[in-house]
Amino acid sequence: MAYSVLRNKEDAEDAVQDAMLSAYRHLRSFEGRSAFTTWFTRIVVNAALMIRRKRKPARIEAFPDTGENDETSWIERIPAPQPDPEMVCAETEIFRSIDELLREMSPVLRQAFTMAYYDELSIEAAGALLGVSAGTFKSRVFRARRYLIQQTQRSLVAPIRCAKRTLSSSRRSPFAPSAVNSAEIPSLEVAFG
Image (tube, rainbow, N blue to C red; front, side, top):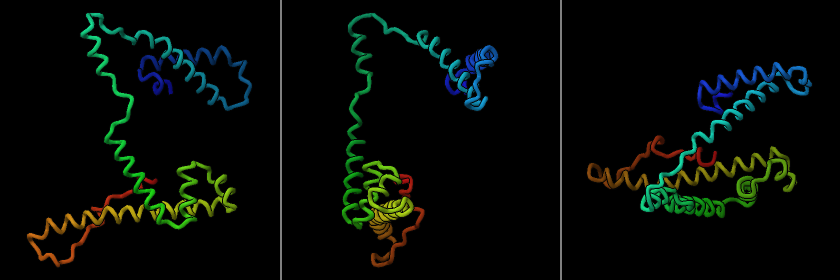
């Protein structure tokens, strides 16, 4: 636990040693409202945080004061606070395609999806607002996600089929059926999972 806070073996060992000493000193103040392991874990984490706090100022380094030309160089290296334009465009395109698919979806499924993912309501709260059980609401969200995944996969398969036809047209007749391997279809479970 201490190592996850400090990222240094020696400092983590020091934190655990400090925590053992502190726990021994304050053992009489342990009230038993929580498990002993929980109490001791909190002491270890606090000891690790204290060591990190003490260590932090030593890691701060001043920028060299060699002149104004150097100041512009480190200022230019600061990343822009705006997001990457390519990512903004990709996100906009994804949301636009999801909105188009939502328009084609049945109103019941669309409502469940928007309540779960856009409004970020809990399952219980959304079910209560709709007057249905939590299980019914979960089922609707699942069916909406499945619909979006299926429709998105279909829209991605069409360009793959066209590309395979153009690549294989030199070897075969343009009227020969083109088979798409299921391994070539990108999975979108990650996007909506």
